[in-house]
Length: 354
Image (cartoon, rainbow, N blue to C red; front, side):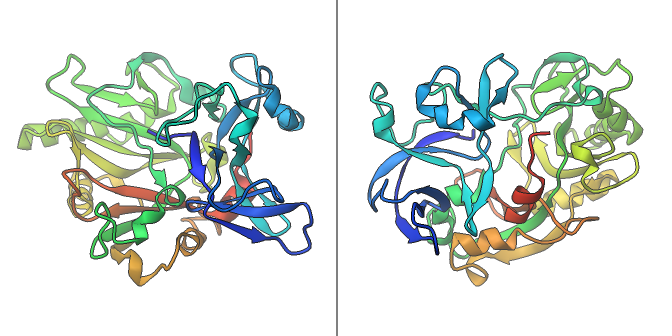
């Protein structure tokens, strides 16, 4: 699960040309613009990742964010932390001294301090056509899609035990839409179902885009046919894109669904890329565009900055893509390893609060 507020160590400080009051602080793979002299190499501070929605009502320490705070879903004024460009430097996140919060024990470097500091993840407004009628929470037998950003795992280039140098990856396009999951599970009362990112939706409703697309593409029938043939319960996860979703970033007519994950419900594991691509083809459904099938990180990147730059480029129908996703071609310690790189061009141009 994504950690929004964590303790981080300063690994480097870079001067910003013609800037007397600010400098760039490097923490793991992130670069954050801070007040000059506020941190030294080796210091630790509290890092608020991009998309942290900070409560400015109840915490005076965040009063400097009041000019960008807006009334949120819970009635409180919150400021969303976004990527921004300052004097030519892309700053991602907010990094503050621990001394601003003397009442909090920051001894655990692995902990997410979101709750202690009243921080939640920013979620864009959901159009009425996507809200729908909920049947229940997101099923416990499934896994939500939430890839780690490459800046949080700089060790991925260091021949780490969880990412050895000989590991190869599938590289695919990260589409800009809404996460959708369709499943077949013979071991539950609801044998088939459709889910948004956080909810299972009622199938008996009209005007909901998730349900309409799942029915139009006959996804539930295809999963049932696959189960009848193989005895395997699976879920397909992907991106729902098109009209009425994220301003129709790809400029397509109507809506469409592109799969990026196939989850083996019986064995509780994601299929490896090659197996996934074959199964999606067998089902007659669409797969997210794949750029590379056998990609070695060390052959292409010397550092995380180069990996982040690789995320820039065109999407399917636009000249800027949201980013790319790297998925390992073999299991590591019995788990599937993957992460994403988000385009800075996309973040600076399109990542708005609307």
